[in-house]
Amino acid sequence: MRILQCFNWRLQDIIPELEKIKEQGFDAIQINPIQRLKLDGLREWWMSYQPVGFEIGNYFGTREDLLVLCNACKQVGLFVFADAVINHVGSKEEGSLEPHPRVEESLRNNQTCWRVKQNVTDWKNRSEVIHYCMGLPGLNLYCKEVEDRIVNFLKDLIACGVTGFRFDAAKSVGLPSEGYCFWPDLVDRLKCFDLFLYGEVIFEEDRRILDEYSEYMNILGNYDCSDTSKMVKYAESHDTYLSTDNLGYTRGLSSETILYDYCSLVGNYENTLFYTRPWDRTWEREEIRIAHQRKKVKEYVRK
Image 1 (cartoon, one colour):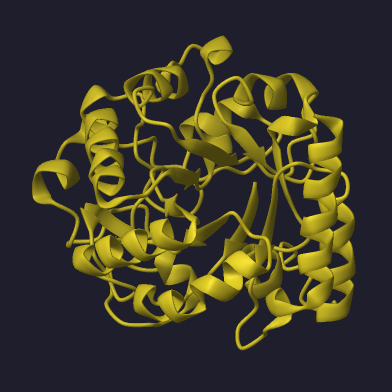
Image 2 (cartoon, rainbow, N blue to C red):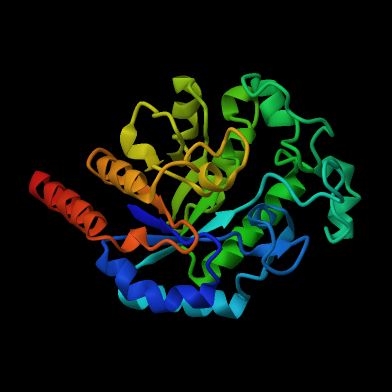
């Protein structure tokens, strides 16, 4: 699966590019989180990851825009994958672990729907990672009401034509070996749909943890699980390019370097994601089309 991450592209603006995206050998596009956000309009890039609920529609597009895009993608043979923010919501104010007032009152005032109001301080401590917050009000995904809201939201997106999901901060959700069944329950409730699922599990070196996540989804991360066919690899992501802290480790790299690194990944992994930098058309480069084509020829010959 070759995925083009159309980060911060409005849904209507993706449509004119679909034929070129397909020509380049991409199989799918990944769209921005399409949930209602705590602030309207195009603001800081990270605002896309501060939703206030599980309803379709924000600056990047309406439900109708999504329907039109999914239909257009179907016509040219591309899948539409949605970035789903299910782990947390927007904060009342910067640095606060209280949910924003725009979060639905019945959810905001139900204490069983929220994680411990304490931030993770040790990312190698799994108990903190799966129970504490990551700088924003964390949802308690081990609560049935929260799980139901998420499943209904994903089904709504599927009804619009979405055929896959990137789960933001998947690493922060506990596993069955840790006493939690959110992931197997979610996969089971969606099993009647033919979906491509991949979860963000970054900076996790423990192969046992990666392997357990890979039982339920493909892994979008820096390190490999035992089965590399379950990995979605990237040379760059919106986090590594746009973040101003240590996470932004590709900010100083040229587009040429990212292009070379991405084409190398294509030669070694079945699933890859290419992030489109702002105002950068590197995704149109012939080297990417050739890399995708060569890989497909090899896969055909192997069969």
